[in-house]
Structures are given as C-alpha cells and as structure tokens.
Length: 210
Ligand SMILES: O=C([C@H](O)CO)[C@H](O)[C@H](O)COP(=O)(O)O
Image 1 (tube, rainbow, N blue to C red):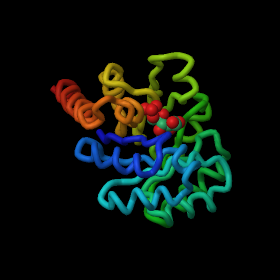
Image 2 (cartoon, rainbow, N blue to C red):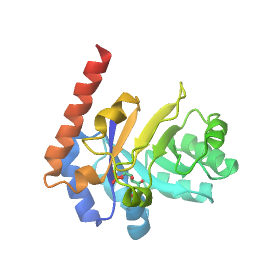
Image 3 (cartoon, helix red, strand yellow):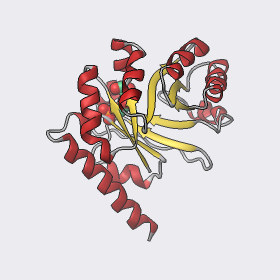
C-alpha cells in the first residue's frame, strides 16, 4: 500500500522541507493543486529535482485542455498527473495518451462522480481511480471519509481528510494508494505522524492478511 503525501497551502521551501522531514515514511509526493496554482508547474520540477527517486504526483485536476496541461506537467518531471472523472471522455483519453507518451500515469479524481459515471470510467483501467472527499465537504462535515465503490481489477486510491483515527477503516477498504495531507503536514511533529501512518498501515495489513 503506497502512502502519497499531499502538499498543499504552503510555499515551495516549506513543501520541500516537509517532504524531506517525512521522506522515509512516505512513497509518493503530491505537488498539490494549491501549489501548482500558486507557484506554477515549475513547482513540479522543483520537487522532482529534490526527490528524483520518488514518484511525483502533479495534482492538476485537469478538466479541459488536456494535451496542453499534460505536456506542462510531464515535461516538468511529473510521474503521475490527475484529471477529473467528471471531465469529458475526450479529455480523459487525451490525458492517457499523453501519459503513455511520457511513460507516466494518470490518476482519475472521482470527486462528485456518480455511480453511473464511475461505471463508464472503468474502460480507462490503466489509470488510478481516486475516491475523494473534497476540502470543502470536510470543512462542513468533520470525520467524513472516502468510501471505495466495489469494483475489482482497478488500481484504487483514497483521499480527503484521512487521519490516524480513520486510517484502519480506510485500509480495510483495500486501496492501493492512501493519500494523506493535513494529518501529516499540520501535525505538531510531522515526522512522527508520518511514521505512525506507516506503522499502522503495516500493522493493520499484517492483521488482515493472517
Ligand atoms: O486533493 C486534495 C484537496 O482537493 C486539496 O487540498 C488533497 O490532496 C487531499 O484532500 C489530501 O489532503 P488532506 O485532505 O489534507 O488529507
């Protein structure tokens, strides 16, 4: 199970320092939408230069203009880029084509995606499918966690307000990628928080496998 650290609402120096602090406990590093919007796609290159051995996820949340946006982020060194599941099919197809051109990967963000749209999206089975509780929903209803819709054979991720308390429930749903932002970056001791996330994942997985 991959731990993806989401970096949002900080400057680039803070983002790089944060990633460095928790580096040993996390697998993928997400350059969050807020960083890309505030500092541009150069933020992706800055992160990749610092962490050449980690997968860098550019949380582009592309909705249109896929070729242009995918060129931008893959040329800056992204390994994975996100597109919204609610985007038109032509946009998602173009993102996948671009990912294959750059030998990268696409993550489809399922924010606000209905069950019927989720079914349609399953033809893009080379992508990672991310169930996502939005920041705005988290702010009005605390402790809401992403629910993974039942479907075998897809690469799955979960994101949005995941805490150490909700982690065991998230792990039991069996995602391939667990995306954690604030619960690490806003913790008093981010290194210790990240270590606890990793330890809990290994522990709960071990129990489930017995
Ligand atoms: O995508 C995200 C969100 O839309 C923008 O902040 C975050 O990466 C995702 O929600 C994970 O961050 P936390 O919710 O802070 O764990």
